[in-house]
Amino acid sequence: MIALSKRMQENADLCFAGGTVADIGCDHGYLSIYLVQSGKKDRAIAMDVRLGPLSKAKENVSAYCLEDKITFRLSDGLEKLKVGEADTIIIAGMGGPLMEQILTKGRDVALSCKELILQPQSDIPHFRRYLMDEGYLFLDERCVFDEGKYYFPMRVCSPTSEFASEGYKLSLDVEFAYGGNTLQQQNETLREFLLKEKNTWEKTLEQVEASGSEKVESRRREIQEKLSLIHKGLEYYESI
Image (tube, rainbow, N blue to C red):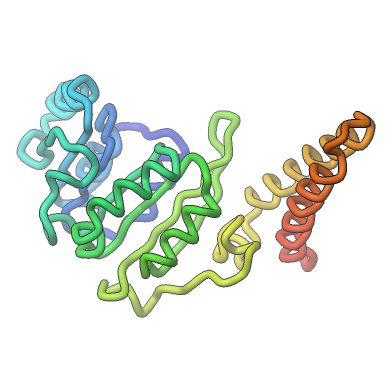
């Protein structure tokens, strides 16, 4: 069985079993290989905007003799994926703004699938708000620490998905910042992240106040707002 990194394994674990998965930005193809090889998905469509990664993915798929179950497409985001063609869409390892562009350009395709597994690398609170504005419902959220970094994969669906009855919405600033489900479940990795962030911003505040800069007050307010949000997140763990 092919081995995945911790964060990619988390993305794989979020998928429901069965159907076809479209791996957008497939890179080396490992995730598609794992999902088919493990039997979690029947078929996979590995897609990438660059020929290099797509060629490498083809080599890896061939090495595992899965050419009959995994196909490849050179595609800018969801451009070459048809409505209803995939049950699961995975987009991981990209910046939040780029993922927003992909989902906006391919809105009809994205909303037609049963679920989306999304793991943005940046602008995560804004990305969560974008998903809510687009009408997506959250099904699950995770926090995972892998090779020195924290990642926040999430599972969402459209209001017309068969999973919509299981979905929930976000409403609080702290939920958009750190994930509603991860906070409610008192995810321990998220707690570690919050404590690390708290320590970082407290030290930054000390440095700003000691700098004597003319911009101290505005910067202080900005940092205090961040710390206030972190404290709100940590309140979920007070019963531990």
